[in-house]
Image (tube, rainbow, N blue to C red; front, side, top):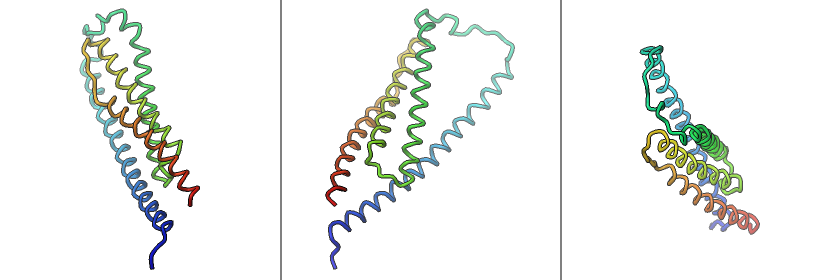
Length: 171
């Protein structure tokens, strides 16, 4: 007996939702492990550098900072930290939301992907500006590209939301 079109769509949606849930769960675990390892690697360096010369004074490059860097360094640092926090929190929200089996084609998901993309672009630009102010070098990583790709995906997900709504209304 042949299955009707509606049953095939429902089966395909269930398989896709199951795959999204599994990948999201793996990603959540991987992200938590990555953050834990990153935080752990910071502590031994801080402890050994602190103990090695905790009361020594050495002139460093920050004593020769320009007035521009002194005035705008702190606000740029705050922008960079806020963008990083937004990217991390939004990433966790996306992964936890999809691991619970929610449909990825919702306005909430597309907005979260857009926010994450924009925050990655802001993070990369502020990091480059901060490095230029204090070090005089221009170093641009690949986060801006990831931000643009995520922003483009948000548009795809927004369109998918419209199609999902139309499909639900049709069935």
